[in-house]
Amino acid sequence: MAGLAKRAKRAIGSLIKLLLHTVGDLIAKTWFWTESWLLDTKKSLYGLAVTRILIGLTGVGLLLTNFSTRLYTFGSGSAWNGELAEPVSDFPKIWLFSWFHMVAGNDALFTVLYLVLLALAIAITVGWRFKIVLPFYFVLWISFIEMNDAVGDQGDNMYRIVLLLMLFADPASRWSFDAARRAKKNFPTILPREISNLLHNLALVALTAQVIFVYASGGLFKAGGEPWQNGSAVYTPLMTERFGTWPILSEFFTNWGPAVAAISWGSILLQVAFPLALLTRPTRIIALIGIMSFHIGIGVLMGLPWFSLAMIGIDFIFIRDRTWMKATDIVLDAFRDDTEKSRAPGSGSTKSEKSEEASLPAGYAK
Amino acid sequence: MAETTPRPRRRPYVRVVMIAAALFTAWHILASFLWIAPYSASAREIVGQERLSSYMIPMLGQSWSVFAPEPINGDYRFEVRAVVNGEETEWVSASDVELSMIRYHLFTPRAGIVGMDVSSQYKGAWGKLTEDQQGVVGLNYFKEDWEERMETALDAYGADNVSAYMDQERRATAYATQVAIAIWGDDVERVQYQAIRQNVIPYNQRHDPDAERPGIQYSPSGWRGLIEVDGQSQDAFTKVFRAQYERMTN
Image 1: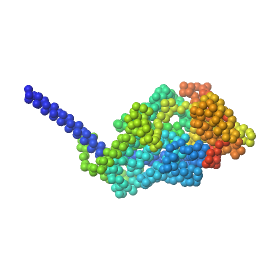
Image 2 (image 1 turned 90 degrees about the horizontal axis):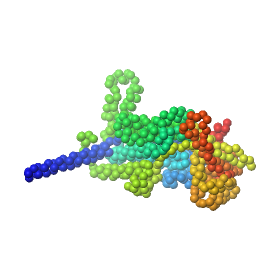
Image 3 (image 1 turned 120 degrees about the vertical axis):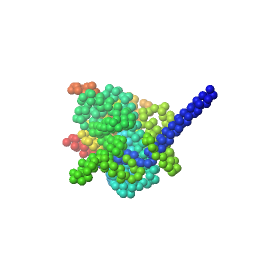
């Protein structure tokens, strides 16, 4: 009897030991996996490069679109709105972000600063000296866009937050002038490599959180509204002058009831489902195609092209580097002439993917 | 998680920085979550409303209840007329003039929505006045110090919302002044404007050929003396507005 109790005790002891060991092992594995994920390589380099390009193009596009009306909307022609005397936005009151506010009285200086900002936006797009250009662009952009709070939209906030997070990341290490230069020197980093990787990956995590929170809450806010519930919500804004800038198209898209319901409900479903849809590849593809169509619709039909382009740009971080490389490969392959192909048999997508992998410096995974 | 997760030796400082940065990111994400999600007082208790605001504002300020819970269902227009050399002009819709910059344009300048915004902000402030105060707004105020006299008259019926209204009154009048001078030149003596709101045809009537848009909602205001704000360049305003006006009328 005593022996049985002793053996039972031993068995329980072993089980507990096993449990602790398993849990400990799991914790250790999670820890090392996370550590390796954060420190060893930079994630989503191609996706973030595309985001950088489209964010840059958004800036270029917005500045060109508003160039001929710049003084009317943001400069000395807009003093009547009182924002020159007393800004509505917090930013012009902060010294660092008051550049445009300071020169608003002088049309020539305002224009010079506007052109400087445009040049910086181009530099961001092509990824030229990105690490140096971005802080200046960030400061000058905010200082510009916050000059007229009344005509701003939520896209301005999203844009600012994305630029802020990009300061910590490395969006110019692919498809940029910097990339070409840095590749020759094995992609040097300013900070120690592991720290540079860490900041990049955490910025990516924060950016992901930002985007999925925005979509999910946008969906939740809508779900509470009667017109969204009865599936007619997209009709009324498209009929207004402000958000129905193509009346013929507005009429076309709102003509057939089931389509209106599908677009209205689809918007909510897509937005609310977005975070979880990202988790597996097939649902991710559906979510990304859906949300990008949603933004193209907003951009074209509702007269908000630059807001939409920025949002589309951010969504591209969710496409894996492997996919980008495959796509690049297909494009390059199409342009390679046939003689070259026949000389190098088997130069399919797999091969050049491998060769690109091989040419990546240590610490740069895809 | 791979079976063979590498367990390299890390320099201690790297781990310290990693933990600190990860904790900060976690805080940032928690704060962003609480701020972006539909408002929940109980959820925000975790960090405290004040701490949350001071972290998020201004840099991370944002609000995503766009087109929700009910999307916009009407137009805001802003019409202006003036007395020029003793004679009243016709009404001109400033918002229509600007609208021509964005309608059927893929790339829409923000200049196209300025007048709509003036109208919407003005109408919002006007709507908060009492009926008596709205009566005062309908009177003419254009002689010297009219703004002060008007404010006093409004205050007589209660001071709530008056100062917010006067800000919008000033903004709308200053805009109307620019519009009037851009169209009719320097001889403009006084202006009158109307901020108008009109809803679109309701969804279930959209196929009815006889359907008419619901009635126009006015916010009647009287004649006003001109307001020209310091630093205003009439030239910069006129150049853009006048060109659109001529394109529209010709």
